[in-house]
Amino acid sequence: MRDLILIAPPTFRLSEIVELLERDQFEMNIYQDRLSLKDKRTGEFLQFEQDNKLAAHYEDEEGDVFSSNIRTPNFFIVSFKDIALVKGVISSALNRDDVYLDNEFGLIQNGREFAAILSERPEWDWAIE
Image 1: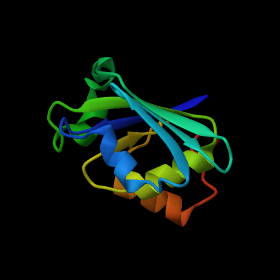
Image 2: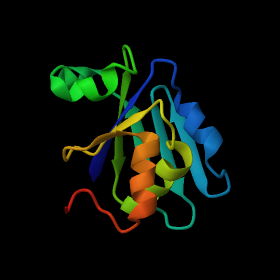
Image 3: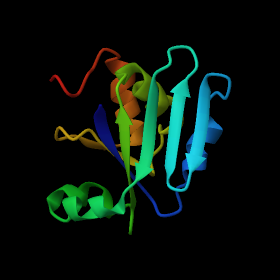
Image 4: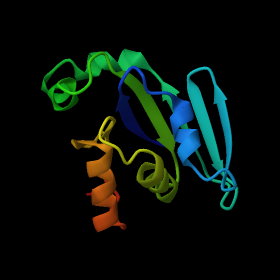
């Protein structure tokens, strides 16, 4: 499994992701602070799980990237195995200015900027660069 960190405003809800995804492509389950998605075509899955303990990790200069735009953010671990699936979800549901993605390899971008990189470089795998 691999992970990304989703950093979102306190008003962000996992149901917003569900609303933006094609319901006929995914089996979706929200339980408390966890969203599981399973791609019906490939059988691959990914999971969003809220974990605000991650805030401690962003108390240094890393947090400066998003802290001026998001006060008291919520943090979600995005666990996945299939990078194509997570790229699709980022491009369709997280392509927005009010959330940030940390690839855990030194890049923290808002969702729109992250999706733009994916659009420009569809083969990009941030873990092997």
